[in-house]
Image (cartoon, rainbow, N blue to C red; front, top):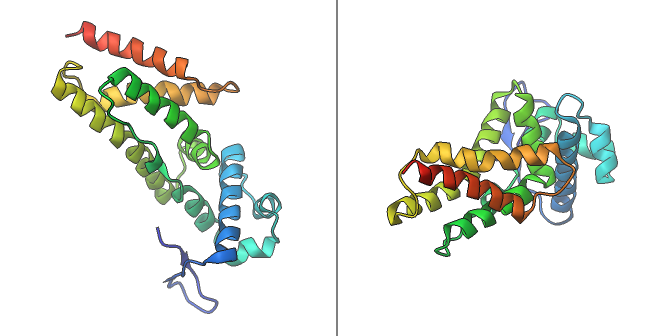
Length: 205
């Protein structure tokens, strides 16, 4: 999503800001990462510029200069989350493939931006743009699993079942266990989730 910044003398219009490069790009990434960590820890309501500056080790005016609007900083910190890194391979072993996916999903959700998205989703923000960002990230994560499950249905590895419901059933426990903390989500956790859910589905065949 392109950043939009107000000009110094505008009356409400916005113009796309150019993407900075080099040192500026690194500074922005530090600030966005800091913002995500704070959103993950405190939520949006207690999110402060001063803390972003302290955590990113920059001057507060640097944060203000890049994001004059607090909501813009929050939105960019969330939207820069790369949910597409969570993929499902097709090794021919459905159990192993899904276990790999759930472990990768847990790792992704444990990053600063992943935790920030989960925090925002749990607190039901009123801002429609933030809700859309959270929903889009979730959809990107789940699309790759649905594709693998579709293949499993076609090959007869699983009996037909509502694919959206199955996807949520597999991913839901990952979110729950991570929220409970503080222990890490393990491959054993992933395999137990998969075994219980797939066993239930196959009984219905």
